[in-house]
Structures are given as structure tokens and as C-alpha cells.
Length: 160
Image 1 (cartoon, rainbow, N blue to C red):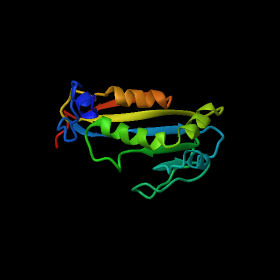
Image 2: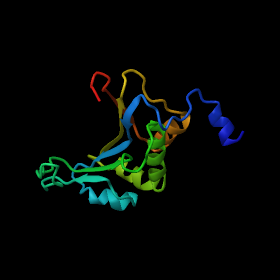
Image 3: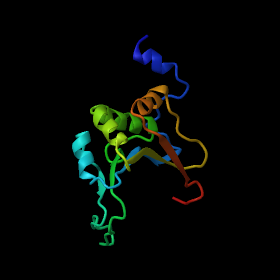
Image 4: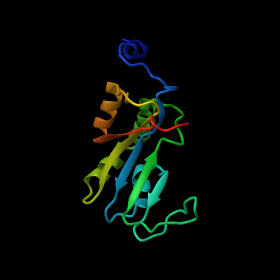
């Protein structure tokens, strides 16, 4: 069976311009314990979209203030790279990045004190609904030994 035929058997089609979605993304959050987060970059061969180092000042925010890191963290987000309101596109992007070096990811997962998961914020514009996942995204996350949390926010009461 061709990929197109296989995907057409799914109940929910890809909806890049879903008007019920304010925005969504997929973020890999790795809390590295005592390991310097720059080691994650080396092990995965990927640059983070954000990194927090324990005891160091981070980037200034819009007000010019910067916080001191309270944990070591390495974060990779699809938000700046994927233009779609369909969470599956964001997960596909993240999974493809991580599949380039699964051994590095496994090494990190085996290290004491290192914890990680995928966080998927999903903001509803009109209330109700929610993202759909196909077996491809679930299998990709499972193959990488990653748990996934979807965090819902509802903006249906807010005026534009």
C-alpha cells in the first residue's frame, strides 16, 4: 500500500490552516541534572532553540530583565520552524530531527538525573476540539522512548 493510500485511511486529515487553533508547537524539554546543557548539543548534534544553565543569567526578556538559571535545561521547539496549526506537522519535524541521532538520545536517557519529555501546547481559538495524532507520530515518539504531554488552553472567551 502506498503512503498516500495509507494516510488517506486515517479519519482526520492534516489541517494546516485549522481555524479553531490559535497556535501549537512541539517542544523537547531536557532537564540535564548536573550535566551542562551544552553536552546535549554535542550528544545530539542539534542546536537548541533555548538553553538554561544553572547559576547563569539567561537572555534578556522584552523588558530587558534576565533570570538566573535555577536548573540545567536544553529545549528544542518547532514553533519558529513549522508553519502549521496541525500538531502532527510539528511532531513530525521534531521526530525527524531526533531520528538523526537516536544513539545520542538513548545515551542521554540512560544518564542519571537526566529527565525529558515532549510538551505540546495547543491553544484553542473558539473552544473545544483538540489535536489528533496518527500512528506515525505515536510510533515515532515510542521509538525514541519519549513521553508526550498536550497542554490545552482555551481563548474562546477573549475578544480579538
